Length: 494
Image (tube, rainbow, N blue to C red; front, side, top):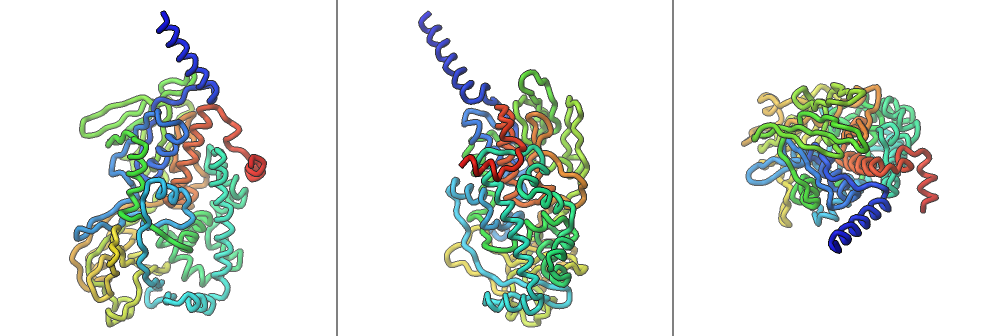
């Protein structure tokens, strides 16, 4: 009898603690579909908010890391996905510190922009000379561009303060409006070129410089929406960094830290079972062992939903039904070529005189977007970049797989070619409306934010938003969702 009384007292204490925490026990099981940066980051943030006792199953049909990946060439690993991050990528910086990872040592190299017949811009080793050349060719267009990008980034950086105070947004439009009001919404419908011309940037500068950066970042042109373009142009400025050992280590290390249960399988459907009190979702999946399913309180989709028919997840039992739009993505092919560059194609008959480690291209008809003499993910203290006359590993970014004739155009000879084909980014500007993070009460689509801008840090921001949205919805803290005038609210909370 005494033992029963003790158990009842303990149960009462637990119930009281749950009530004090928000009136409900936390979720018991959460499903995350996708183990790229979005999936691994949201797993970390969900555990951060709901506590270590929640079980999180992470489904991944490919390899952990998603579009953060490497390819092995001659027993060395090289980045085949996202190669670097900006110094303002605050979530990624926090992950690296938290996980005890290190920044990769930078190996400096010069860049140039190729216009088809000659270089329209060549970087030198002298910063002031580079500025003078920009001014000489384009006037103050580069300053106007920088001011425009800085204004966008200053507003976008507000998201970190909002998230630190626990605020979340149920749709992409609500998130953008909280940061830049109608100007950010308009920037998702207005082109980069139109926006830059409006602030006094010349058409020549857009054609020569801006288009080259956008081709290298998105494989798209200055006709793409201004908001995504501004984020890409911000990423081309300032200090860039990467992770020693490979950027994908952030994903695998986050999942290891959270002790998430990684299930290598393809999710085929999500079915709403009931909505009494809290919803319950059935997730069906397939792997080598066959078909199976499990039930979850919260489901986060951290993967593009509609790359092709084979990857579409079926949603059942929802009223109104969840519509999956067949939105197009921009294909990108990364080719790692181990060989000798054909410098004469770029106007250098003597390979020893070729000074560039990175080449961007303008919008002239060409078969590649960017070309880089890349370094491995592990750089020793005595490492040096290969000289232009030596065989090196070159990363070629192109919209389609390179033909043999195209490889012979770029390289005098080569030992090997290895490729990674990505559905890398949404085709920005192809949607007339912005998608929502919340598909149902506790069913979320993290990658919705890709349709505003697409980068590793943007996915980390989306992960934090979805984790906060799930948490605030679970405990019915509606004052933390889709609030207006957040700058004023955050100031009053300080």
